[in-house]
Length: 297
Image 1 (cartoon, rainbow, N blue to C red):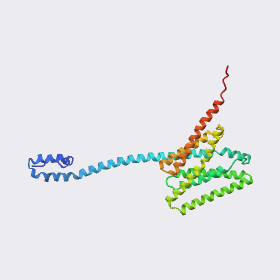
Image 2 (cartoon, rainbow, N blue to C red):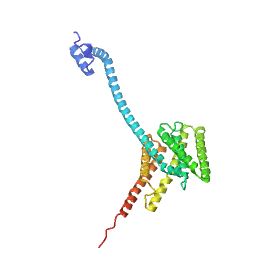
Image 3 (cartoon, rainbow, N blue to C red):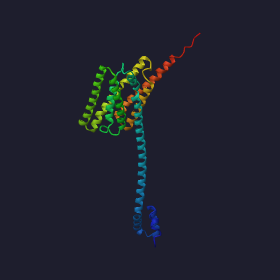
Image 4 (cartoon, rainbow, N blue to C red):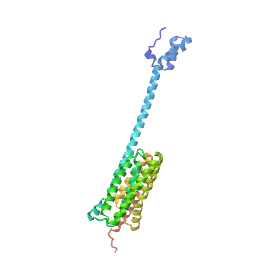
């Protein structure tokens, strides 16, 4: 009795159906069932393997596409947070310009102090070094913002030295030499005495200590505002820029899982919130005190 199915028809039926067909076709001759069934299954095996492989590839492809999409969105958020931090930091870097316009115009540093710019220069240099590939991978936006900051602080210090009296000029020049000497020592120690993981830890802890020491200025301003009950010495836009920069780099550090970025900027975010709350509270108090009194009869 001829077999009633063609090859292309056989290759599209299940094993269970093939079993039933073999029984039906052989018309009760069960002794040949296993032989025919084995032949048909071997014939259809390549098709089933190709189908299973194709289905597996489709699942893997879908999973890879979903993973790629998630990674792309994650990378975009990280990059956006870093760019935002750079922008807000730039606002802070240019904020001393009115002071130095006055210094250049009057050709005198008057009673201004150059120490904040010296400290800021050292901080920017250390953080810039931390962000470079010799120390850390994948945080180049930290290096970029701090290299710009270091250039601004060096310009401010140079102008201060140019227009300072002889005593201030000598002291500031000595401090500037000291800053570059300390920075050179940090570079030498991190490159020559540390392997890469230890180098990142060493420079990372230095950058955290440097950033935390920079918070002495906001703490001083907060204390001054509370003591005088006035926001005269705490400009709103400067406080807002500090908060936005800190929270941007806090998010950047969290997305990168970098302890040395998100811890100091988390502290900066908290201090920024405190400054903004104090500004809202004391500026409201000043406005209320300026309201005209209602005459009583």
